Amino acid sequence: DPYAYRTLIGTLYFEYEKSNYITDQYKIKNSHLTERYQIETKGNLVSRRLFIYDFDTSYTNVNYDTSGTKMETDDIDYRVKTTFLPNSAIPLTLHGSRAESTSSSGNKTNTGTTTAYGLEWRLLVRTLPNLQLTHDATETESANAKNNTTASNLNIYKDIGPTTNEVFLRKSNRKSSSGDRSSSRQINATHDTKVSKSTSFSAGGSRNDSEDNKGSKKTHEGYSFSLNSAPSMDFRQEHDYAYYKTSDDGRRDGSTYSGSLSYKVSKRLSTR
Image 1: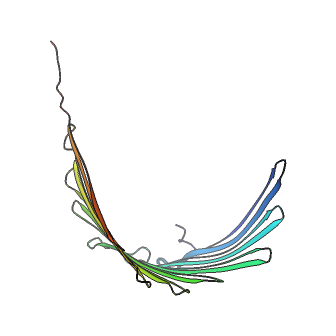
Image 2 (image 1 turned 180 degrees about the vertical axis):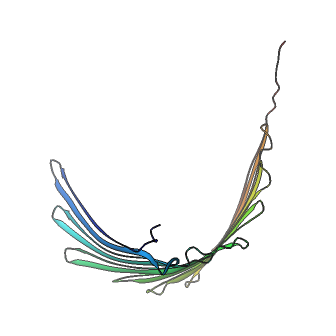
Image 3 (image 1 turned 30 degrees about the vertical axis):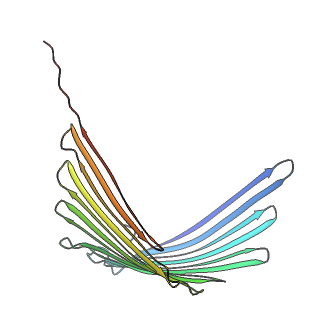
């Protein structure tokens, strides 16, 4: 168990590569050097059952040289992840990260920053549906643009008798410094039933709605059904049906069906 004790880990990584490509007309020399330094600490506070944590930071420098043309990149990363009540039926995880990147070639220098944070909460009670709720937010920033995205997901899962049922919900939003905005909503549902040892049935459906601030709206829907049965070695059947519909500037819909039946007739021949 990596969280049973409090640990501090340091990592050094170096990589060097050099290559030459020579023809009658060209002579190309390539080389790159990578160096990475990382420190990570993980463990628990008070108790392994109460609170666990994982923090790390790293610095990576890469130098490229292609026939005298040089480029250098520097990356600094920070990451943190904590979980409250990790062994319980209601664990809550919080996480965050920040990445700062700088690249330079000649007289040009580009910088960028990505900041992300989120949470995950689970409900794991045997008599209730299993729930997983997540929310994530990301901000990316460079010299010319800044974008923000958020996404919330809810996953519900439950076995009832011979059936397995799952529902997935998602909502996301995106906003940029140029004024563009968009959002989407998604729902997926699946159902599987083991009718008998030789027969199974499954069904599924999905819908996705999206829109932006320019007035564009799109809807995608799809549904599917499947039946598979092989009650004996001589008889087998499979049926699959799907329907889909798309609505944006116009409407398009369609359906597909595929099925098969097979029956094998056999008779034993014997001689005296």
